[in-house]
Image (spheres, rainbow, N blue to C red):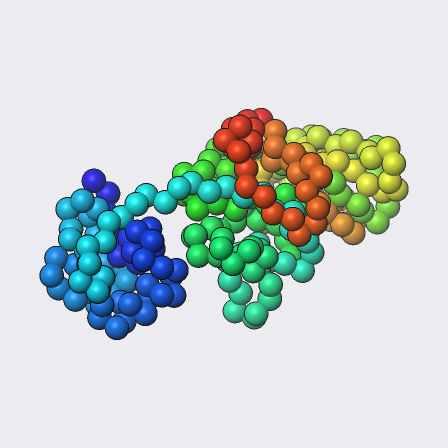
Length: 239
Ligand code: URA
């Protein structure tokens, strides 16, 4: 039996949102095995420990796995909070989704747009972000010039960046937009596409992620959010 931190236990039991649970603990309304709880992180064993709030028994429910697709606009951070008060993807969510423990599984730069996955599931996050699973990620990238054939060959061969060689990328020129390419990579290193393009002497003007694994962003509008079905979650994990 795995323990759960008290705060998570109470939120999972549906006592209220994080903020309400924090204040219930602070007000001394929560007890574990007859003793008033003093912290938020104490490990609680569901089914073994007796937890009460306002004297009533509180039963933990494993939260349902939630996976959302977001089309991130520019000037939004792919984090859960920001010390400098900038807008985050969590701020984009409807109020009812904000206290469900969702966080981004992966990252897009502040000035990048496109497909970002939010989930409350640690195992899914691990599968999506650990380099050993190597999910393909496809970006539509507009740069400040036309890539010469030898530059495309370098991207396709693998390039040396300051944190090591990249895996070979797949590069296709967009038929309908100037200086625009589809670039597919397997890794998710910090600012990887921008650094690859900069390494060739160009600059990225716009970068949008349109696919992770086999899951396409499709026609979800910028700023749009929707829940994924189990079939779509499976697509996400395939290459
Ligand atoms: N590569 C980048 O350089 N930036 C992103 O946001 C994603 C991939």
